[in-house]
Length: 162
Image (cartoon, rainbow, N blue to C red):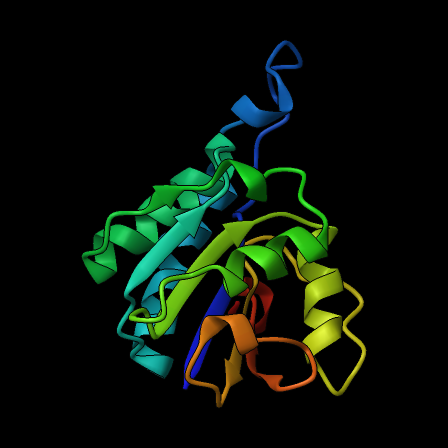
């Protein structure tokens, strides 16, 4: 079984218009929601992460670090996640080391909403900030992981719990 948790970055700040998009930090809500959602995921799913893989964008990497602190896994940066198309994310997953069983990928919309809809039986209008969706595939190799054999098994976002 191969499992991917897709985590959209927590809410980011637009306070400083001089910052490049990639350098935008989390705002107060993001700083509150990221550790909350990490704790919620740990309580509900109890995943044993083999890897946390993040976009280089500050807001995504900061979100990943909150999860990394709780799950005791250091996030690694994958440049291709930033501004990626859904096919780029799928290729990234299909290239993962087969010794990994459970990973989390921290990234962005609109890509994550498009991916959620590829793996879901129901339409998802939007994966909100700090939204998490879990996708499982009963395959031995990551190269076999695809929307034809993988399915969304869970979907969480902060407003469900507030």
